[in-house]
Length: 167
Image (cartoon, rainbow, N blue to C red; front, side, top):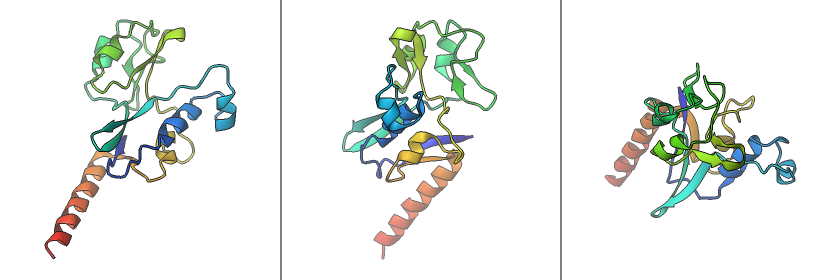
């Protein structure tokens, strides 16, 4: 399964991914329309500074997802394609925020007015088969790849850097 992964060395902290995420989850699906909507579109990715680096965090769709176990309503579940989602499960989100409390990454947020937990749902994909946050990243810090491909590329970059130092 593909995941949204980040090369933190490339992230500028510009928050283009946050804007693209919110717009993709808006009714109008475009920036100008989204700004004027009554219900303000809500992002599902968060850019934070960690030391000298910027890190974009979104739902990791954990293999052993504590949010699924903690969901007393039965709304949080794993979809057929392996994603963790809270719509279309055996129950409806009641807004108890148990999932918010147990998420180790802090990437589930509360939509208090609708009593709904919001998280990355990958319902932002278009014909390019990439999430909106990845498409919007100007430095390509965000990648939508299979984890093993990401680690292989990272190893190669490390080896290239070591090779260049010893010359």
